[in-house]
Length: 143
Image 1 (cartoon, rainbow, N blue to C red):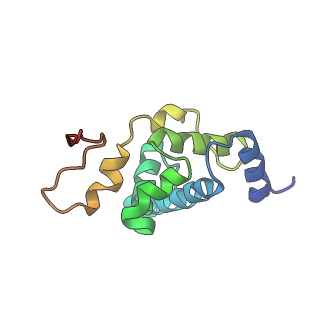
Image 2 (cartoon, rainbow, N blue to C red; image 1 turned 180 degrees about the vertical axis):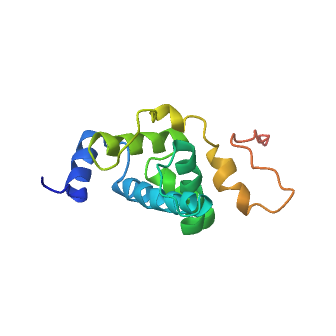
């Protein structure tokens, strides 16, 4: 049996689904490693499958550690705007043999995980400051 070449398979995925940048797939793989370490630490070194919610938590923590206040901007640049995008990335990798899943894993595991602005911007706002409005405010016109 021939070993899977990650880069070759990733090139095939990128050709089939150009929504996400190559870096997004590499980041998800690193985020999965981080999530597995967190789960392993919590379960006294017991190695087990990481759930979608555990993966999202690990990805969030890893993104904040790697990119700080720029995490959301970096992810958005790669085509990742919501938790469901992480699910798409993961399942693109699963369907191409780069990751495995259990019978109960699905893309739905990534729905509604967390709001990106809340997850990636709030940790860097001064205490007591509200989030900036996402819609531009009307400015009075000068007469």
